[in-house]
Length: 624
Image (tube, rainbow, N blue to C red; front, side):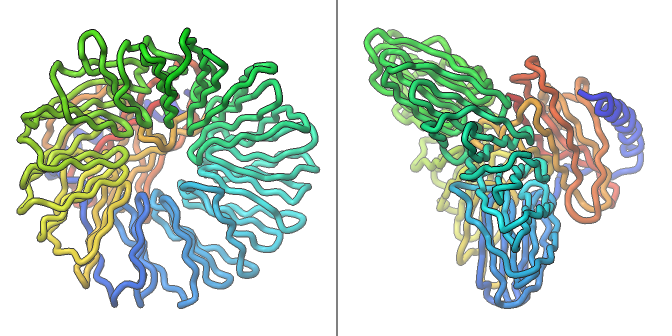
């Protein structure tokens, strides 16, 4: 960590001590945070009700109404009836003739941009994206869905470009720039005569006669990978943190996380390359190579009898040879000791197997890179989520495995009449009782409804409607949250949900007031060494805020809420809350191997303008 960062942490430690003493003497006790629910009274029947990730947009005769689940505040924009709307993850861009506006939920500000002419708006290559480009003659205007800022780049002629999840590239053949949503600035390649701009995930590329030039969004820099005339660029799925340059007799992996390359020479052997978001495999006969872009390395395992099945998931590789189950996790970048048994299921960050000799159920974590035995029993009901496993016996008792923690947690409950699961979200219903499992924290939560509820899971969240109420929970909220509303329509997304009763839009936030771009292994953004650590802190304008960042969790009930970060080992940093939007803290993570695998826990300590003290939910980030 830099001397400046260390100084800030020391200052924060002293300020918190004074802050806490003064606050305890003068403030009211409060266990609530910013409200989970807010409403919007519409001026007419909405012509659009749209939600994605952490944003809800309502359009009616009064214009566009934009909601951030981080600040729980509506922003309003009046345009003409001809305005064009472009909505993506955590941000939207609205264009009305020669005027454009960008809105990102983490910044929660409407940022205007004046254009020379109505722009061209390139579509993303595929998948969810956190940046938008407007091509305005010879200018490219780039909007970061994380920072909420515009960056304008001027070219000699109208540029061509491509947009991936977090990275973009634009070139006119003479000037070429890469752009990262993490940094919000144009980075020049500085080489002429390039073409074939392409982007996927966290990588953007151009080609010349001798190289693929690759821009990595994590570290905001270019690297050049030698490439013959017969070389091909292999693009993994849209969340990818790497690309592969494939030659006839070898292949080179470039990791945007480690900013490094590693090559595999296979000669004339016929090999099979398979790619996923953060891992890849190369099958060479009985040998199986697995690649992790978090380590930038390859590991190998050999089966005398070959491979029956190879399951390639976003952060996990699981291979069966008829006797053993071999698992490879993205964090360690190596194969764990095998389980002799049968694979029952595999997902993004975990897997479930049963041992042949003992009948023991074993769950694998891509973060601990180890198998963990479930409590002994027979489990006819099994669910494998993106970041966990749920086993239920014949009585209804459920055991949940957290891939983040590598631990099992038991929930004694009545036998469920229905189970619901989508990606990372899971919920069991037993009459008027709902039990949800959070694979991020390894915790169970229960709510009682007025009637058997209609339940929907989406990504990391659950919504349940019982006729008179909406009940919601997410991976970032520790408890169910309930709103009295008889909905005529509703929708749930990653960290928000809305219900409309005919005149009022009720919106729920599933986000923590403290958030960071990393989110692992929830299949999204990853915290990289050498990359940016950026916390957003949402609070009431005028509130005082201190961010506690530590490496250890606790669970202490206080008069101000549930304290989850161990303050005895935490750094305490004051964060200014602006009149509009969120406060933030940005640092570059030192590129030290010793930091690999470190998990940071962050929680906000607030004094509101009305002199009440409260704690936020906590957020965790794992450095890979």
